Length: 98
Image (spheres, helix red, strand yellow):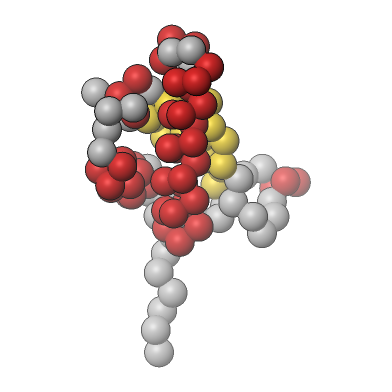
């Protein structure tokens, strides 16, 4: 069972700015408030580590927490976020080195 679902959409032109916007949501189906907050904290941390370096700045991102996020290995979830960005073609283009 996946720990999260990643959704992305292009940033509207009138809202474009230098910062990458990321949202988090966890349904009540996942558990009580303590459990939902724990899932949200885990998602926030993997997003903090991966999104700034790897994600395109012209997209908005939403991580939807799932029940599997609690028992999932943290490093595995980081890899899954990287893979999700790749699958959505939302990886930032690497800077050309001279």
